[in-house]
Structures are given as structure tokens and as C-alpha cells.
Amino acid sequence: MNEKIQVYETKMGKTIANLESEFGAIRAGRANPHVLDRITVDYYGTPSPIQQVANVSVPEPRIIQIQPWESKMIKAIEKEILCSDLGINPTNDGKSIRLVFPELTEERRKELVKDIKKKGEAAKVAIRNIRRDANEMLKKLGKSDDVSEDEIKDLQDKVQKVTDKYIKEVDGLVEVKSKEILTV
Image 1 (cartoon, rainbow, N blue to C red):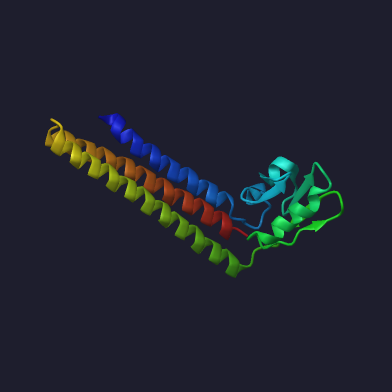
Image 2 (image 1 turned 45 degrees about the vertical axis):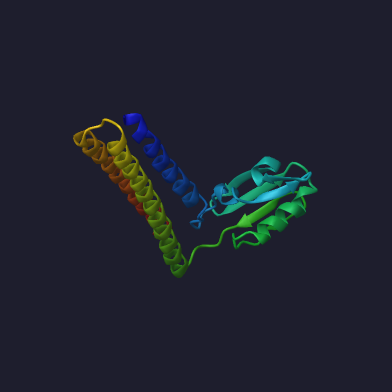
């Protein structure tokens, strides 16, 4: 019986992992190579992540340096960064590309915190939807099989406890990321 609930718990875990990756892509005034994760470059006809065609490093707290393994890739990488939603103009010296992250203004920090809370709320909704699916499955199970109402009630309580645990985890992630953004 517990393995049926385990499927839904795994889905909730994936929701948390997705939220963490979304938070990783939010730039917080410090250079974080993960902001490049969603940007792909055409490499011999194959869309490839920047990290697969170049060495990405953080030489200073607010600078990301991208050194392509092939010098002809500089223009393509630069173009993709300009087309992305990063909002940073890359500079290149012929061998590498530098992304300089400006200090965030107070207004921009507040906007980012709103965005973080919105993403957190979306994750909570996803978790609650998974809970609803689990409870519907348990109701069907109670009608069809020879499972007692008490067992169904116990399983629903377990689903609720798992849901509460993941909702609390989302709240914690939102709080940590918000603090990170608001810290000057």
C-alpha cells in the first residue's frame, strides 16, 4: 500500500528539485555560473549548453568568464547571451567572454523576491495537486478493492503529512533565497 503513496512522494520531490534549479538560475548580484544553464549554443548543428563548449569560471565575485574551446564559438556564445533574458552585455577580448554582474538596486531586489515567492507559490500548488491526485487514487481504491475505510483514512493522513513536509520545504527554500537576494 505504501508503494502507491511513494509514487506521489517522488513527484513532490521532483517539484522541489525543479524549484531549486529555478532558484539557481536567479541572479543575486553575485556571479553564479548556473545562470547560463538554460542557454544553448549551436555547436556543429547541435544545440549544446555553454558549459559543454567552453570553460566557465568565476574569477571574481561579480564576473563570469567563458573561455570557448574553439575560438570560432565566441561570436555564437555572445549572440546567445545577448538574446537570452540575462540582461547582461557580454564583452569579449578575442579569447574569452566576460559577463560583469552589476550590483542589484533595492527596487530590483524587491522584484526578484516577489518572483521567488511567486515560484514558491507555484511549487506549493503543484504539490497540492499531487496530493489531490493521491487522495483521488485512494478513494477509488476504497471503492474497488477490499480495503477498509480505516486503512484509507490512515493512508490519506500519510499523504497529508508528506504534503505538509514538502510545503514546509518550499517555504524554507523561498525564505533562504529571499534572504540571499535582500542581503547587500
